[in-house]
Image (tube, rainbow, N blue to C red; front, top):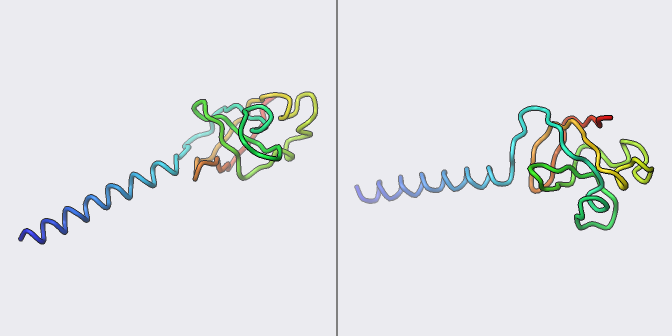
Length: 108
């Protein structure tokens, strides 16, 4: 009887810890939201060797996958991502420390 209880307890605790790990590495974004978007290196002070698109979610910058800094005009133009922080309507999710976009619409 004690063995059955111990096995059940261990299985239950394993399931709880497995769920917590998945929650920490992936944060769902349900609806489109307006976020700051810019060059992560030039404007948000992120580490990197090349200019790359990033968004700020809850005040923290994340590099973006699913669209590129060059998909939205000249990044080094006066109003480009390397020289300005813009707003964008974004849908996607955080996954392994990066923001995976399913929709990215730059706002005027």
